[in-house]
Image (cartoon, rainbow over all chains, first blue to last red; front, side, top):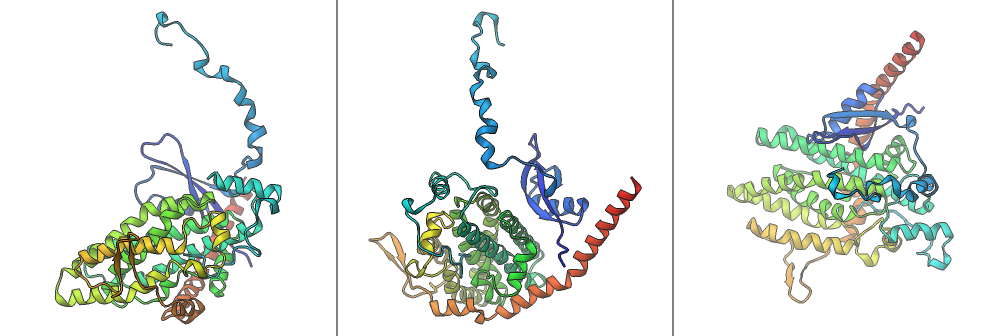
Length: 94
Length: 330
């Protein structure tokens, strides 16, 4: 009988970090245990001040093959970048 | 190092002409050091080999806790006890990173553990040797983790993304393991005559089993070629073993201990130490199950799994009950 604990993905934000980064996964029966285990496994050396855990089955992600067609439109829109525009120096920093 | 008894490919390495388009695109990624990620297309043999190698690497971490855990209650000082506890705890973490990486390839944790318990997956041969006294704990950290580091540093450049990233994380933590071991052995080597004798004895017993950790000589390594082409293996067994010998001899000499192999000699021409290869008959015998501790190790692992069943099942039942109550309340 398969009674395997569900799989959770773990995200940690470091002391000096601005966002949570994916650090790995673990098995746990519920969210509380997942967080406690994540603390034990992924923050033994002060790596984080905040932990997010998400059951792996709730994560929707792009497929590797989508990379080209999904993201290609942004490659041809150079006018989205500040360097596209020439601002005269006399007006000061903009 | 963890590829013991793994057959990488059913036939030899394919030439580009023999490859399908998918296989060629896959090989191009590897040749250009682009990481392969979990949902990328990959040859079945690549997936199967990695599941076994990463899985056996994971098993090695967890079984490796046993010879060291053995001495936690008998450490000579409180500081040494705290250090050993931290190291053993790290090994559990390392096992976890590796099990997680193996699971991304589609094999469940329970299945990997079942195969270990049935003797169908292996772990590093070194853990089938006993730790007889405290000097062995120092020697294990210094020589066994030292060997693992040589292998794991190279594997940071392995082709499979999750495995490579696990290696980076493990390498950061592993160097404390080697240093604490060397520190403990140093105390004994410069201590009383009895302590020095124990340190020498530990070195003498561990040396050849540690050389065996790198696996058979390249000439005997049947499936090495495909593993190298797929960068599942980054450096050859002999290359890594030579690196290990070269870095360890000065460490032995500093301690004022005798070299464990009388034929170790600096070779001016090659720029490396010449040394005697271990007895490969012993290696294959230990892998087959006839080492000093194989039966104990497996018995302890199976017992831990079976004794823990009530905890796993209980927590799962509790979580399911709470989830059901929550749904009912909404």
